[in-house]
Amino acid sequence: MPDLPTIDLRSDTVTKPSPAMRAAMAEAEVGDDVYGEDPTVNRLERDAARITGKEAALFVPSGTMGNNIAIKMHTRHGDEILCESRSHVFDWELSMVGWFSGCLARPVAAEDGILTWRKIQPVLRTGSPHNAATTLICLENTHNMAGGTLYPLETIDEICAKAHARGVKVHMDGARVFNAAAALKIPVARIVREVDSVMFCLSKGLGAPVGSMVAGTAEAIAQARLYRKRLGGGMRQAGILAAAGLIALHESPAHLEQDHANARFLARALSDLPGIRIDPAAVRTNIVIFEISAPGVEAAEFVRQLQSHGVLAGTVPGERIRLVTHSNVSRADCERAAEVLAAAATRQSTQTVTA
Ligand code: TLP
Image (cartoon, rainbow, N blue to C red; front, side, top):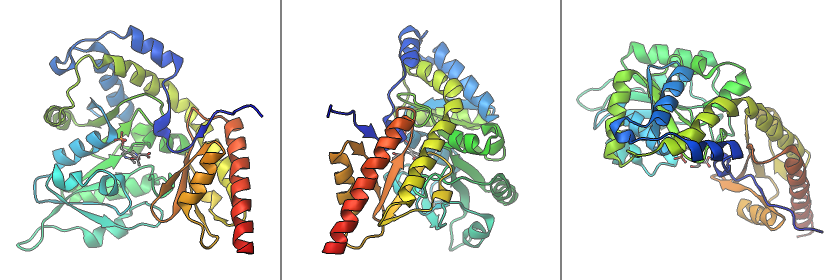
């Protein structure tokens, strides 16, 4: 049998730039962006602001930098911020909320990753001689570790209205907000209409090699520009990267529904397998998370088995396995991945039965 290419489902961060992106990068008009003179970056920032319905946007090297610049611009040292307990800002950003913004992150658990005002209200603090005030709520949409779940519009709007009435800001970690928009079939601008800022990634499902955007008011983004420079994120001829970002922004959203259909396909295939726990109905975007229910089988060992048969998956906390679909995996790849998953599941269930 000929060697088949590896199918990489570890993350949508693994996508390689398309030929159109590479061509645009080669031809990009550039300038020094720290002087504000890179026409391609300027265009990307203008377009991102328009598409998110915000006054201004800033190109940043990564989602992590974007989130932390946003948290910094909405808070002061010693404030509390509120976020979901498995959110990226809390769990995956090296405690930057404390390290960079000097804030305490108060996590609130939600089974499906989706915060509601009912969950938020009891833990919001107004500030007193004993308690620091909560000044920011972070919503992750889609929620990565909950399996790409998404916020209903009413939930976002209610949180924003009630938070704003108390002088609390709302930031959306919208690393995958274009996936949410594709799933809900509504514009991103509507999803983020009420939030004070949004970060979204060009380098995940949208397929650009590098970069994320932070959008908000002109005043907040002017401040964000200074924080980016402080963090060493002032990039010079960044138009080379922004050129790919423009293609990601304008052309990739139309293809996301295909990734979602592939994720649903994998989820359905997994739900038929012995020793696997998954609710396929919960898979709405491009992230599929499942558990091994067979006793004594470790997620890491299952992932090693998949890898030895050419399928890369990732483990996530809680002995769970994550598959992420993206533009570099086709339906045919997912069909082959489903066969590899089926063989691994059958092997482990027969081993557990005979053990
Ligand atoms: N997520 C990565 C890992 O860091 C877990 C992935 O493979 O999914 N917000 C969310 C919701 C994210 O999922 C990520 C990256 C980020 C922010 C950070 O983006 P980068 O990696 O560009 O710093």
